[in-house]
Image (cartoon, rainbow, N blue to C red; front, side, top):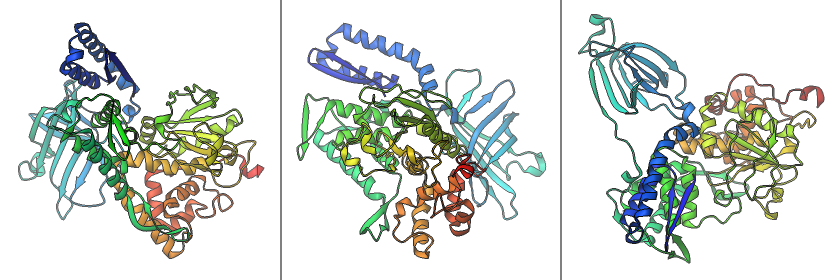
Length: 553
């Protein structure tokens, strides 16, 4: 997110450039005696607010990477059809489709089901309408309730409506009407969200109190991810595996606390604890990130980054706050000169795919970047909405040739990282050894670190964002059971179970490439629960990994 820094006399104000953030800044200025004394300054903010309003609608919508993957709910007056692009199915019986797209036709003040199309899986984002259905013992529909909070009128203004419509076999028996008629209809104008909603009922607290509460919430979210399972008994018999949607947990807690407490503008910095300090600018950036999560305009990882800045948890060199973000350019399948921001001029090669920026220095072959791109596009092909989440979360992989210390984000202490590592919620990037990738001219037989690390990143940047409880509830028990029954090595970390399996599943080339999970058939036979998870999120169609390797190995 960009920021506008405004100086006036001895005052400093940092405003986000979204319409809601500018509105908040305008409110702060009006309440500041020194700033409000300048009519010119007030006029400037008013003009900024008007201009921002004019450009933000077209710009923000076009720029939002998630937009193509968000289902729409519309009503057309011309056809009298209400269309829901995706409705989550909530039923009293199991085994039904998780979601569907459904059209209703308005008929004499009632909505009649016109058509529908089942979806095997509920998309990770953009499927927020709900269809609650109840079936009797014979499987016949007895009642249903459709609800949405995102209905718009085709050809109308931008007003959004809440709508619910209910069917009851008791009120409108199917045998009598020959139709499923939703006759209990209720609607209202949906409330427009604004940043000011968050703290409208909050009380003023000290910077010290706010800091302590944010730190406690942050630590609780981290601690809640600790499972009951020892990660690797041969390494540390006390260290337990961590798995959980930490970014989601913290975002929920942070919004709840912000509804009860806020800070008043203060000058300089405040000493809060153990020589830790906070500044008004850091608080504003944190609150703006919180607002963007509330408005669903940015990733929860962006809030984690600003929370760590606010809490002084940015010690490591690869923290995202220390590096400017790359611009995302749709390159197609080609490598271009890298549009590297200041400080990252080391990167001269650049390509993008599947919402991920792929960069490298001059020593890395172009084909290595393209091989990583091909893998990422295939890996996200069954769940294309992953691409929007990854792009919004600024996913980036940096390729190296020897070890991670050659990358500008890291120092000599990373010389031992010869394969690669994942991008966590507050990291600048993930890394991978380009010489371990398989591509023409580099017929490498073995594991693929780019595929492996994206397996981890699917957890960190996607599942933490979407609160994918289906995955979190299953992955660690499955890993533990595999270790106990001998199908997963006793000295292998449980936290690597998923990424190792993703790597073997995607390559599907046998034990020469991945000894633990050599093929899909092996995974299905020996790890059926894991195979079900893999096929839930990854493509099932055949893919020719590293074409030409069999003839050139």
